[in-house]
Each structure stands twice: as C-alpha cells, then as structure tokens.
Amino acid sequence: MVKPRVILMISGVLVLIGIGITAYESQTMDNLPGKEKNYPESAAILDILVSTVLAVGLVGLGLGMIYFIKSRAKTG
Image (cartoon, rainbow, N blue to C red; front, side):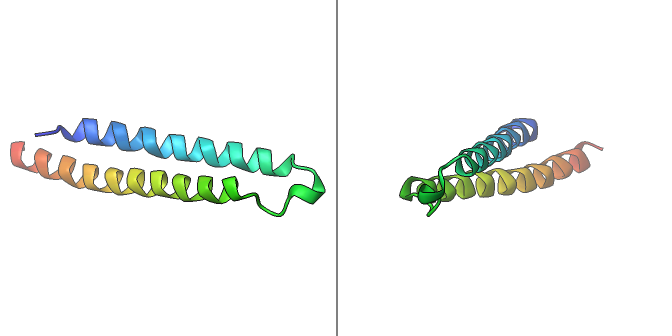
C-alpha cells in the first residue's frame, strides 16, 4: 500500500506545478501585443491542463490527509 507521505508529496508537487504554470501563463498573456490578446487556442488547452493538474493535486492532498489521519489513529 502507498504511504500517506508519498501521496502528500506527489500531490503537493502537482499543486506547485499547476501554480507555476498559471503564473507563467499569466506573464506570457500580459506580454502579448494588443491584437493577439484575443486568447489564443493554445492558451485554452493550457487552461484545461492546468485545471486538471490542480484538481488532481488538491484531491490528492485531501485524500492523503484523510489517509494520514486514519493511519495515525490506528497506531495511536
């Protein structure tokens, strides 16, 4: 069985990656010339991917915390 710490670490990394990509995307969208600010198609795909990564990361953090608390209750 997977240890709760592994789940928490992987989920935390996913959340950090999602936040980093969001910040990068925000920077690049702000630097586009005026005519190109009509939201390119690649940005929409990136939004979907970032949302998915963040959702998986946050759900993993929640489940990891529940699993961690339950495993501590059994040993204590």
